[in-house]
Amino acid sequence: MATTSPLKLWTVDDVADYLGVPVQTLYTWRKRRIGPPAGRVGRHLRYDPDAVRAWFEQQAAA
Image (tube, rainbow, N blue to C red; front, side, top):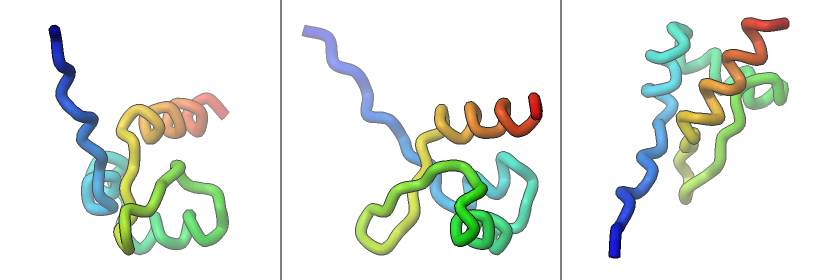
């Protein structure tokens, strides 16, 4: 039986590095509901890398 490795979720720092924006920008975007989708794990925000890439592609195409 083949097992797949679990998806590694990105932290706020990971997403900020990927997009080249300050961490505070991500928090501002989240508050305004305009940034990439994120979910909470306890009190921490986590991002699906595929969703962040899709969000970026959508923004770049607009």
